[in-house]
Amino acid sequence: MYLFTLLGNLLIMGTIWKEHSLHTPMYLFLCALSISEILFTVTITPHMLEDMLSTHRSITFVACASQMFFSFTFGYTHSFLLMIMGYDRYVAICHPLRYNVLMSPRDCARLVSCCWAGGSVMGMMVTLIVFHLTFCGSNEIHHFFCHIFSLLKLACGRDTASLTLGVILVCVTALLGCLFLIILSYVFIVAAILRIPSAAGRHKTFSTCVSHLTIVVVHYGFASLIYLKTKGPHSMDSNILMTTTYTVFTPFLSPIIFSLRNKELKNAIKRSFCRTFCPLNS
Image (cartoon, rainbow, N blue to C red; front, side, top):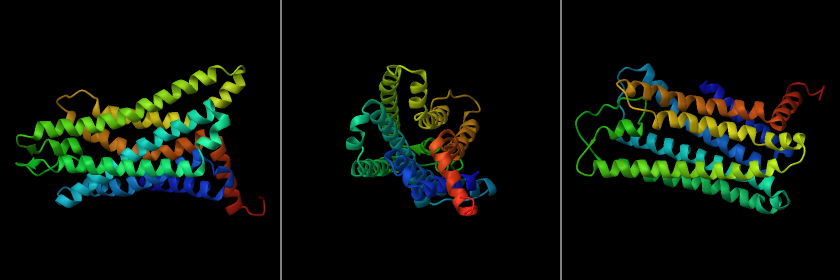
């Protein structure tokens, strides 16, 4: 699954790079999303594999902080990119005549840069807040990597409760803010689609949003299972399992969904394969 995630996202990036018909804002954002998925997978998954294969593996303070920084940076960048992809669909459907003006190459590059900058700022902010805490007692984290909630359980001191609340508020506010804007975009999109007179026109327009909407459901669905589930006697073990599932399955499913649900990208991948392996037939 790890290798498939890397190869699948690299295939999407390579296809978008080679096919000039895909040099549009939507596929620029998809390429940035694939880069985010690859970096997240490369940064987080090898540590998880090493921990699962080793019963006793120590981790330094710097390594733990860097794990947390990269996981939050790429996680927030992923959410921000999904948000601007929703905005791209909103402009394309609700303001088609102004699309080329509102989504010019320069504006798209700025949006992608803002997503990466915003993800880096959020990752740095959360990491600095967490590692300003005082840790005492056990130094063993009951998790596959430096997961924030498992790390917060080891903190102690007078300011622990307030800093923990601050971390939760920062995380929840940013993620729910992105989700709210995505939902708001789709409210306007659905309203515009319902005004289309023909059923074929409505279906064709909505089909351009299916892959993005599916990724949003998968991304926030797995995240909600981790952070919003009820606590029970086996919550620690189940939380580790769900976090592993989220960390592995979300990047794994992303290239599958976009390559299978997006007809234009699927055809472009087929053409690329034909040109590469069957040059005489193409």
